[in-house]
Length: 467
Image 1 (tube, helix red, strand yellow):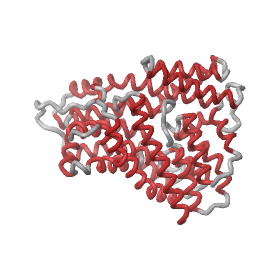
Image 2 (cartoon, rainbow, N blue to C red; image 1 turned 180 degrees about the vertical axis):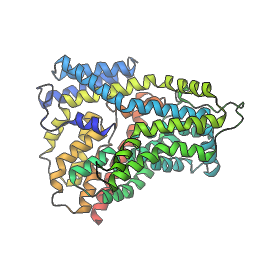
Image 3 (cartoon, one colour; image 1 turned 90 degrees about the horizontal axis):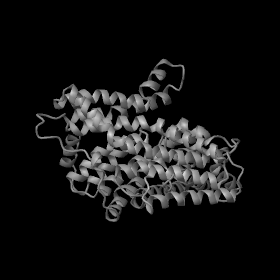
Image 4 (cartoon, helix red, strand yellow; image 1 turned 90 degrees about the vertical axis):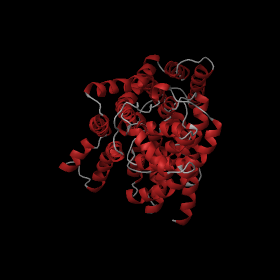
C-alpha cells in the first residue's frame, strides 16, 4: 500500500530472477515458517515488532536457502523504500495533526460534526468523510490526516474507538483499492487497457455499498470485539482553556483539505491534459505530489491554525518538535514491515503464485480476484498484487467490451485488499496508531479488509450479470 513507483520496481517483471533457487514447496514452507516465527516472537515472547520483523525476514530467507547477504540487501532495500515512501508523509501528517489538535482546530471540527450528526449517525458521517478525503489520497496520508479527528470524536462522544475508527479506515481502504486515481487501480487500467471513466463510475457504484457493509455495519461488531485505548502520545488533547481563541471551522477545514485538493487537481490534470511536456501538467505534477501537497498544508497550517490560535513562533516550533517524537517507533515498524515484504518478493513468492495460477479454469472475474488475493497474502502489498494480477489477466481482456474490462480491473483491485496481515506495512501503521496488539488488529483491521474484498467481489459479480 505504498508508492506506485517503488512497488512496481519491487514487483518486477516475470523475467526477474529470485535470489534463491528453492523450489515451490520450499518457498511455501519458508513463507509459513517466516510468518509463524514473526507472530510467535511478537505474541509469545513480546519482542518489539521492529526486531521481530527483522528476525522473521532472516528466518524466511534462511529457510528458502537464499544467500544471507542477499536477504539482508532485500530487507534493507524494502525498509529504505518504505521509509522513503511513507516516512516523510507520516512526519508531515503528524505535524499537521499536532497543529490541528493544539490550536483547537480539531476540536472545532469535532464540535461542528457532533453538533450536526446524531449519536447513531456519527459512524456513517466518519465513513462519508473518509471516503471523500480518501479519494485522491494515499492510504497512509489519509490515516495521518484523519487520526486526530477519529480519536477526538471517539473520546468526546464516548464511542468505542473501533466504532468510529473502522468506518474511517474502510472509507480510505475502499478508495485505495477500487477507485482511481490511486496507483493500483491506475496501473490495472493501464495493463488491461480499460476505460478510466467507466472504471471510476463502476468503482464508486460498487464502493458505496461495500463501504456501508465494511464500515458502519462491521464497526458496530468490531467495537464489541475490541476495546482499546490509543497510545497517550498520539491522543490529541483538548486545547488549554488559556487559549483566547481557536481557528474557525472554515479555515480549519480548508487547511485539512488543501492537500486533498492539490492532489486531486494533479490527478484531473493528468487525465484532461495527458501530455508530459505540457507546462500546466508539469507544474501540477510538482504541486500535487503528496509530499509537496502535505508540506504546503503544514506551512499554511502554521498561520491558519497556529497563528489563528495566538501561537507565537516559539510555540509553533515547539508544537512541531513534539509532533515528531511519538512517530519514531511507528516509522521503524512500518519500515521493517516493508523490508519483510521485499524479502518475500525477492525470494520469488509472488512469481510462484502467478505460475501456479496459470492453469486455473474458473470464471475470469473470480480468477483475477483469486490471483490478486494470493499475491496480496504472500507479499502484503495491495499495489504489487494489483499490478501483478492485472498483468497476468490482461490477455483475457482482449475480446472484452468496455464494461467487462472495467469490471476486470475492479476484481483485481478487490482481491488486492484481502486480509491484510503481518507482512503489510499498513497493518503495523493501523496497529500502532490505534494502540492495538497483533490479535486485536487481526480481529478488526484484517477482518475489515477481508469484508471489503469479498463484498466488493459479490457486487462485481452481480453487476456483471447486468452489464
